[in-house]
Image 1: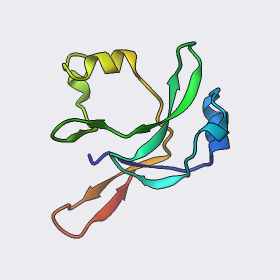
Image 2: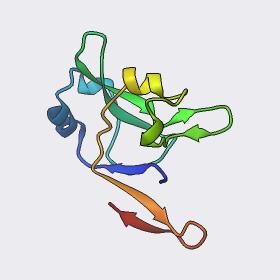
Image 3: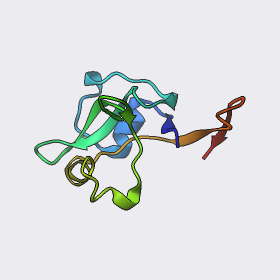
Image 4: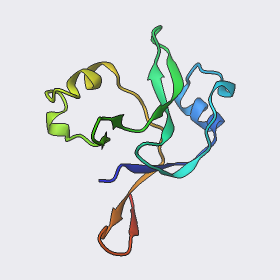
Length: 113
């Protein structure tokens, strides 16, 4: 999986759907049909007071030798890198679609899911 997704809808619709407390003027983003690993995207996270806030974060984890954005679900609770993040730092990624490139060694074609 290449980790790409799309997000339709403006900030107001996302605010209504996820009921976060962040002022919409504090964050700046547009809808996208190709949110790629490494790009900065909005997520809904719990703040220290236990309320939902909207933040902009980089999609994936920057490691010294690569960008990590996929993890097998079977090992996420035991993997050294992921287990604490999975337990303590979860978030909601507003997305309306995801896709994978097919036939990567030839001409790319999309497979929408």
